[in-house]
Image (cartoon, rainbow, N blue to C red; front, side):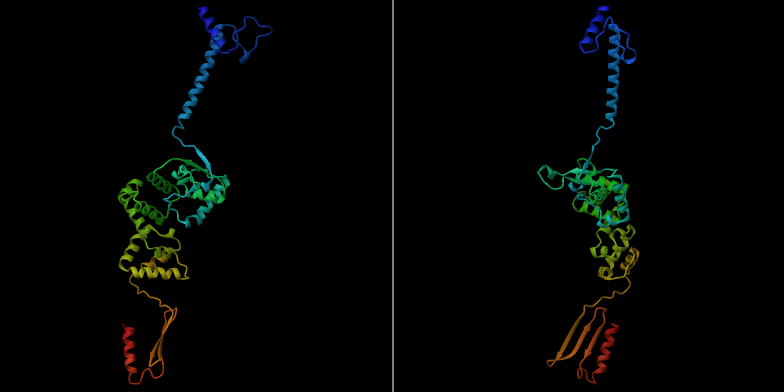
Length: 341
């Protein structure tokens, strides 16, 4: 038995473990610095240290398992990141008090605490010198960092177009909701570019009720002049989709004319007031006339002049001798019939 222990002790010494001395000068060291005097003691000390190292290694492995599959967060120059091809934020979204508050929070924290998500662009592999990443979600945080001139914290992960679209849609609904019109523009682009074969498939993919997708699309497909009549497209509400669509079906010319008049008017109206005016189908539409002047000749001389001004007033001026006393009643009767008609 002692021979076996001596052999093991020799092995320990070969591994650069402290040698075991039979005799020492001076007092024996105490505590952790104390060395065993015998081969069995050296062996026990070696096994003890090995057990501690093995346990530490296992603990580290366990901690690493919690990061399995996780993507590292990088600091990226926001100028190297472009908005998503499915970007759904209107420029007005970056001019609100909410965005100013987000920007102030990011500036105070020295960066975006919650990382954005980006995907690498395929064009980078071809040697492109432009943007290297495309936003999956986090357009407002990216825009804030870009305006502040600070790096943006981002997760870099590959994603297909569908994965990008669905991740962006979920993120937006979980955070600062898009306006009804922005939501509709996002859905419309996905359908127009064939990302989903139908409205129903799109609704199933993003787990949203079909009726909500339908209303959003109706708003996104409103004529540009109708959208521009509102103070901001962000003010257009879901519940207005059906009334506006019906108004355009019944009286398209009237709605478009009212929308144009609202754009040209200096009157400041709320979104609700604009909606009410656009949907007034039963009211007569007053069409403004172009400012013009037209002359009518008889025997080479001006006999009558027709003028209209910017307010819609029309003036007819007949030169002396154009209407004889006998034909004057005829002119009055014609004018009366014209006005009544």
